[in-house]
Amino acid sequence: MLRKILLPTIFALLSWGFWISPDFKVISAGVSIFLFGMLSLEDGFRAFTGGILEKILRKSTNRMWKSLTFGFTTCTLMQSSSLVSVITISFLSANLIGLVEGLGIVFGANVGSTTGAWLIAGFGLKVKISAYAMPMLVFGILLIFQKSKSLKGLGYILAGLGFLFLGIHYMKEGFETFQHQINLTDYAMGGFTGILVFTLIGILATIIMQSSHATLVLVITALSVHQITYENALALTIGANVGTTITAVIGSLTANVNGRRLALSDVLFKVSAGIVFILFLHSIMDLVNFISASIGIADDNYTLKLAVFHTLFNIAGVIIMVPLVKPLVRLVSTLLPKRDRPRERPLFLNESAYEFPDTAVESVRNETLHIWDITIDLLSGVFGFKRSDVLSEKDLYQIAQSQQHLAQYDIDSAYEQKIKVLYGEIVTFISKAGFSWEMEQSGQIHWLRKANQNIVDAIKDTKHLQKNLVIYANSSNPHMREAYTKIRVELALLIRKLEAIRLETEDEDCIFSLDHLRLLLDEHITNMNKWLANAIRNNLITPEMATSLMNDVSYATDVYRNLLQMGETLFVKQNLNMSEANRAVLLNDDELDEINKQLNNT
Image (cartoon, rainbow, N blue to C red):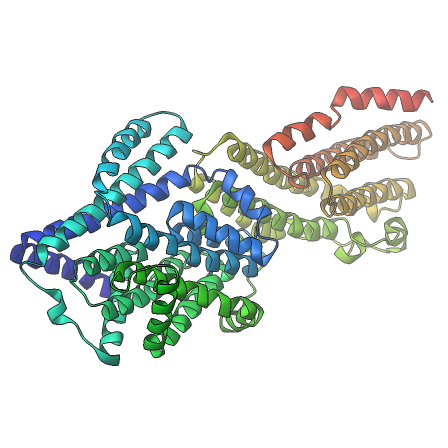
């Protein structure tokens, strides 16, 4: 209901403003151009988030000071704390970083956002900034029409900066002429009531424009031409800082619980700092005057003093909150507890993961690992073992020998209820995410989709295998019972070894372990063929039994190969260059045959 009323109300107010004052149109156009510049700037930096920014983020957030530095640096470069917040929430949703690291990035971004106020107050109001905007727009638009993604991204950045400068110019021009018609200082409010009212105005303005930068530019340009009082400007700045949390809140709506916890932490951080600065505003103004005098800012240079205040607000908040990060994490974890989702529902796929290529890939990878985890239960049940036994060091052959009867496992129901739903969600997610990414991410997505298909194919082959597996594992013929016991034990041991490979920390170890398993497969097939020939020759089994066993060995081999292919994709890290190198190191079929011949000859 509120959304339906809000937009028409804003349109009506703007139309009324345009009617009573032509100069109000100039100010509004300046704000619009500035906001469009922010959007263009974000689009430009998104062009460089196809792996580069994500790799830097993962390597730069293992310490709090690194997280703070990363947040400060990226926000200083991008001039958008909103984009940094969206990136952070997206990475949290994909489990690429933890909540503590995410908080460090957001806190650092808050400090980085202060550089914008310094640039506007110290540079933007002192020179004819539109002179810099024009060439940026010209070169930026030319680059936008290029096919290269990097050149297009650079074009959006230049155009974005050009629109930012142009927007600041029009806002300044508008306020300079606007003051001859209406003096906004006539509406100034002093005292504690004025602080509260203008803080609220700052919050509302930032929520509407979705940009604290835009609010600050309005405040600074209005202050530069004496259209608002210094005290009211400070209150508006507090409101802008508090209101900017709306971006993180909106971004977290489609994120997982850690994304929502990050947004709540940002709200608590900004609101707490806002309350402290409102209560002690006059004392803080004295501190701003002292700092300004110390660094050579004139007593009547209120725009630079505002930049000092804005910086002080964010730095003080970080100084207070960093030592309290762990209690803050405990608090938001209590307020937003993690709800256990059914295992058959997606755990890592959400809309915020679409934002960036690496987070989409990592979400699919984690969800594929989730399917593999459920598949372990399913396959263990079909082969007649407990999951805990399969993943332990227990002798599975001994367990199988001690079993009096192999029960039928409802593989159809398990697949329909648990695997099929997740597989469908992954395919849908990949389709929605699209493939207009760099080759690195699209290649990884291709292999991950293949890994899911391998898991599904392995389950379907196991379904075909199960029919005779139950019959002959319970057979009165000891030779058939022994043959099928070996099949189910070897497949269960494969699951155990694949899980051990998954836990390997080095890709090279994974590769050699997978090669070893591929060699074992050929050894198993050779031994089974020898056993089968001997059993038929000595009339240990009937021709019908031999036919069933040959078919089931083929099914078991397909299960084995599909699970191995899944492991090659899922358990070896999927960096493009590393992936190509890893696949080059993996032995091919001809090399495996040659090794087997040499082993047989010896």
